[in-house]
Length: 419
Image (tube, rainbow, N blue to C red; front, side):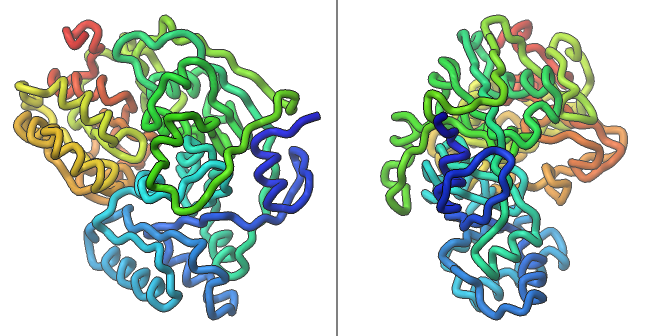
């Protein structure tokens, strides 16, 4: 029997043929951490090792609270900068670069055939480039600091085949919310989820990143697509080293196959307080909202700005709400500025904030008050996610967010004249 994508990559790193369920010791190609690096560094030093095993293996990006919102965060950043200098870590990106899950691909670290781990659950994002990418804990990252190695369980593989043609205005966000709503947050538990099919083939790289970003909301160990010409075009002049595309064998063992047909898919909304509490927008249309958040590592890229600016051009955000906009990276911000999208959004009354995680983590720059409702293009909506346990968070696509920002209530764009 042939081998799956995950078996091939983990087997290559372990130096042997592996099988699902097996625990293997591997050396990741890239280990990413962010504002939690200070805590990781403290644990690393408690191990008793003076120097990081391989500084070039590590990428550190400050993004969760940038610029620092208070003295505590400022000290955290100061400690990280000192650690980076002390250990000779050259792959360091300070507060001006953006969210780690956008910056890492932009900077050419997310490559096909690589094993990437990160002390952040949405590390799964990089699977859109054909890497096996997964989140790990802080103590595990500290061990990688010390030894360069980690234990991982070889996951079973689930194949999600997306067929049909997306109706006008529907996006990969609607596809992913539908999948999670139908199969629950445990639907892909510890699986290597392979997204494939004609709809995936038609998607842009940025749209595919939405699916792999939210693979962890599906319970997956990792999510991925096999690289194609679009992937290789994105990586051209970005990749930091040679890479090898890894594909599953035709006779590889697939644990489960899910077939989706999106021909009649409606816009989807995840309602409080779980990502799998998903309903078609028609079921929640008219729900009053207090804030719209457009951005995050899920939907804050240039193609998302094009959609939102197209809706808001020449119009005004409803006077009863605030609209907070955070680009996924400084690069995405500059691109949106060059295209005129930033000016359009500012003229509409939206507040544009620097690239970072901001309110998505509940740190600053848009935390709601008790009793308020937020409509967000981000990836999680559990209680307290936006920094207020008594607020409600709804998740949706950028188009649904943009149209709703004009009306002040959750709105079905198909009935609002947007299409």
